[in-house]
Length: 351
Ligand SMILES: *Cc1c(COP(=O)(O)O)cnc(C)c1O
Image (cartoon, rainbow, N blue to C red; front, side, top):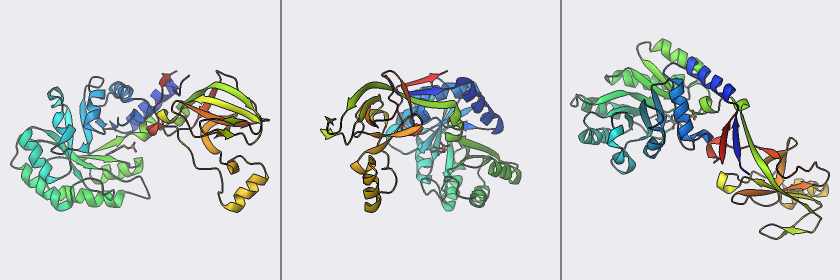
């Protein structure tokens, strides 16, 4: 009935353990839809891994993890003097580590909470959030007047690897050293194992803490399988109409109704192959279904990605199976290819 994420529990846990063992100071990132697993499950797994800190994406996510993981909670969205950042449960105040990305926010945060825990974010080539070199000096300067403030390190959010990050990270770390901040901890993302090892060697008096989400939770795809269920099967002849739009079948075959729709994040994929006029004419001549407007779906049957008969519905999708294909039965499972970070599964089953 459902769109299910099946997890091979033993294999998944072995992978998590191996990533944690290979990355001292690991900070598991537990954000968004919990990479498909839910935030609650990731918080419990982080507790099981024995790490001292996890990262959430937003202040609103804190309540999903705080009762399931008992260490420090780094919030990746920078603190601002408005909104959810000002509504942190006082019971969590001592566990939350804020990300501060502008000097004026540091002043504002410390005026409200003089003993706040925080990291200073340094801007990277991502150009998302963070202090410029001169701003880092300004924040370092204003910290000298706040003896109770708890600076927990400097944070760098790097783009996904396109070549090496080392040159950039070294330039940024030189700014950090020059700012004479009272910390020797650097929180980083998206560095390869080799880059981490090189940095640790060149900045031996700094502790480098990698924040990892995708490579941790989704790093062993072989431990994960996504299935939908066949809910109905209807034979159709060429010209029979079906669906919300009263479309007609271009040839005989079967309509398959499977679980999983827009509510789960199932969407249309790009049309198959070449979409130029000549290519379309050629496919049409061959009787290709994409030429009559059918679009590839993420559902596969017998190892073949199948076509949507029409755009996905809220909780189900209609597929078209041309005659000659093996027709599954109601209740059969079919494989689905999804983006885990954008899919809301009905269930996560750890097997
Ligand atoms: C999401 C995020 C990460 C983790 O990214 P992955 O690609 O999932 O490992 C690390 N740092 C920051 C600031 C992030 O927003």
